[in-house]
Length: 490
Image (cartoon, rainbow, N blue to C red; front, side, top):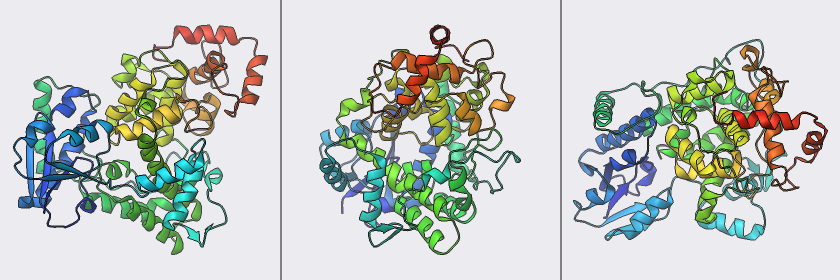
């Protein structure tokens, strides 16, 4: 039996065909030397690797080296590895002698099934169509060929603003892992690496995310029992005092390979069928995993590699240092300051702050999409190239002009005001686009449209908004002001 090489995002038991198969685990220092990762992400990845080695005991060979190549020189036997999750890693393993590459695991729909579906579309690829295909293909929340409840998506009912009368949802917080000797060893090693010159961003802190399959399954069970019923209604809402809301906080567990996504999908479906969670919440959660997560994974491989470098809106400004270094204290705008602080302190915020605060602000300022792909990759505990490429290039920055999304995900301050409690305590007025009290998101929204109106395709669902732009008498002044503060903290 060949030794199975497990990358640090392939750590769950479902990556082994035989529970007794010999395993190879490699801790590569060069991964962290190459770019400045969030300190808590580095801790989580290394802790997960070392915990997996401890679980496997003598079954695993654990090598620490500067590079993967250097470690593999010590291996004198055939090695097999599942298809890695990045193009760089796939190119590496294909060049290595004595390493055979197996099909990918950790996703629901196969590469071949997605390619057949996408080839047959002969046009724009959209999540809604893929999600329906995946539900039918895998028999999830269906009765025959029809969706349970009569509709494939209940998303429109899941976009409620946060309740105004309470500061936190009445949902118990996700269980926090208990650090152990392995975590202490990892923290000491990272301290030493920093002294040697390896740089990290963000703040250190207690490990908040699962590093083992056992911890991940416990968090999944807690979510299905206590948080899933409330998830759907407020999945698009933001609260200053409630960063987790009712989200599962399982993205890093899926992306480390600790959880099989189909286990979560079936668990949520079972919760609905047993009357323990409402259909809108269950459908919304399943759409994120079976739909969105699989969709962005497949687009990463289906599209040409040049897609990662798309920049059809000609966004040329570099990501500024205050944003890159997570300097939330330099920011006055309450929503952006709070969300950036969440990234600094936790290496995580849920998908709406990522999209409608961080991504929205960057899109309005014309920051380089490829730099943002790297920033999200290194700053988030669940960030990987396949995730951030699609989420940034195809969605938040609209850099491919609609190959993936139907419109730019850009909005003014009034939308943030509706979906959060940020604006009430902010010095900026979301109703103002010009003047000292003008909201940088409201001003940036109109500045973005004015700057890009001739680049945005006519089918991008913005015709009515562009008509409003023509009626503004102060748009030139708004654009000029936004040009002056494009890289300074708002």
